[in-house]
Length: 157
Length: 482
Image (cartoon, rainbow over all chains, first blue to last red; front, side):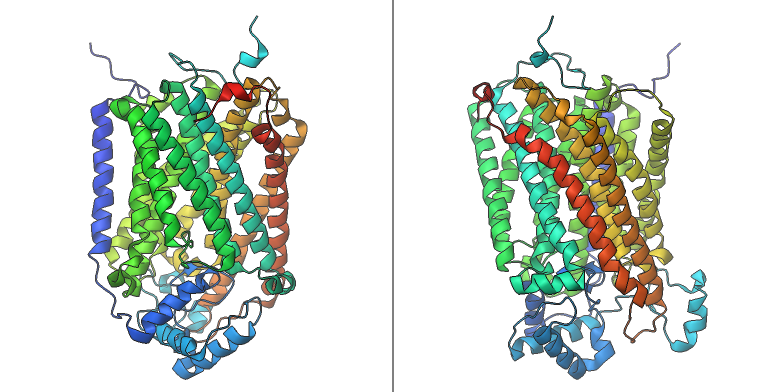
């Protein structure tokens, strides 16, 4: 009678190849899904594009986040344009970069660069919502109880 | 009676079925990558120490006028932390090549030289240019893209040499060779993918750019994890003297689940990005498969807890044992943060930083510290010294203190993250989130204290290694060089 192979028996090469083929296929499918996903509603151009480059050039993501990507010392910047409006945001950027509140270093940038950063943050705000927050103050009572059924699964409020 | 200098290193059993005579150049490569890993760890720890100090406002005020701020200390910490893992993995791979490959050929020797020179140039360049503010501002890849060229050239040389030795028998090799081979190839893929933002069409679409950045970063972590897990299996087998595990179906089954997770579950970091729900569901489903690995980790820890065998302290076993506890804890938190409502609350908070640091320090670093200890033990054996400095009571206490301090830091980051996440969620959309005052006052100092103790413990452990790794040995001539 043929004996069943032990669970610790050597894995035949053809099984290893099949396993790797399945895994590579899974990775390929995931890659295709990511690369063929819908493009963003916003395309960076002009000042906004320069603002994106400046954000990287000054390594702002060491302390700040966009969609949860970056450091944790400073506030998330995804939707700051919604909070302050473009004009308010520009003056706050001017103040923050020039005086370095808290642990933020003073970053010497010309006014046109502040305009570019503002344009970029306004564009980022239009792409979506970066953090989960309750929608309206009258929802506060529901949220304070942390009713899990009201916490959004996929889309933020 | 055999000479002590020729005996296997402390706690190790040489299980090579048909051991080849050691090739001096391969041995030199192992030592070179071990030294490189230790240097990278030192630079990464230095960056980490400055970064945690910077979280305390009073200290930040002192550091900033000196030109020290998080814009370069954090990338220095993350880049060289990753470099430590890759270089440590390289050291173990080359240690394995010592076992199975014969004398090095001339072309191999040249590729090895190019690899070492390219990486030394890239490492020095990155360490010098980051503090000068030369950066791309990308997570894990903040260095100027010019340094990517020597990194890639060096990696191609490594891949060529590695598959040149194991290629023909790759499918008949143990699981750790499969891990290293897959990790080596996936690194090439992910490294190229990390640079797609240089294409204007990608950079101009901020959401596509972030989708790709998360994907590439997830695969990068997956690829270095493969080097770490491979090192763990390789050294674990040599410790136990039993080489059946690395060829077993169980090992390959766990590799399958782990690999699937490594390459696709990164998307649980992207639930909140505007993208197809299908990608998110795939990530969620695959993430939940980690329950299988968690079950295995719990079983391992249970066995470890029940094992009361009285054996002399061995640094390798201590690090590996600690890694098992960390694996169980981090898998548990990983599963929790993959659950969408919880992810919604805590993503983008210190809880995620705590999870990343827990896996990096608790799993990757513990495994590599243990694995590199075996190489150092062998080295001092081969140079006539005794390996006892590696396995003293002082080392035991330091390893224990290191784990306690690191656990304190990671646990605190989780607490801060959860409190931040819940408080932030309760702040209406459009309003500015203000962290609770008690948390603001205590967050930085506790992080700084636990981080500094962790740094000191690492420094004490690595400080013991340095004379063994870099000292001029009387028998250095036997080691040779490529």
